[in-house]
Length: 195
Image (cartoon, rainbow, N blue to C red; front, side, top):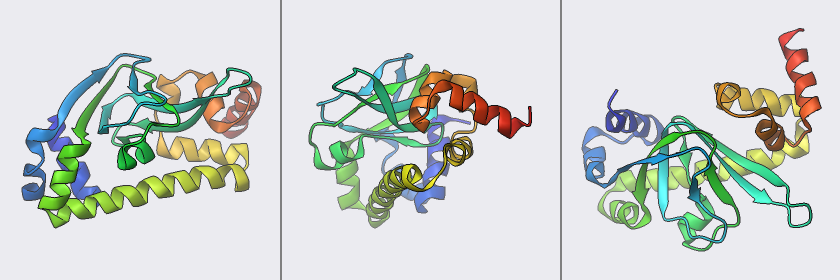
């Protein structure tokens, strides 16, 4: 399926945008390629683009100032939006890096174009509201997962939202996202697969 048609379908599912609504934006999306380890947005840079991942996996991560360890905070894969949301909305420097973990393809729209769409169309304004709600829900769910879920439950949640992740991303990156050590991840995988 053509990437823009795919995006149009996804936006219809996500926010009820009609074909006419989508046509207002069609010329504004840029097809961007990212090599493995390329940055979508870097720490202390202002995020100026909202991306829709058509292929690949991205991570947002922080660097522990004491140890230098990278800790994965968010993951974004196919058919999901990739954005440093607080930085994007407030046009302020970002608190973390967002980086491609595989060769990736993303359809991107600039903040200025998106804001013009919000003024031009109630449907796009609704999209902006729903996008903000989605970002809030993802952040809260991520925080609550560390408060209320076991590592195994976080693992099952990861598979639900990123079904192909184990085929594309190294296990140490997944362990970092789940907040566990590699051996713990191996035990969880064995237990769930019944081996």
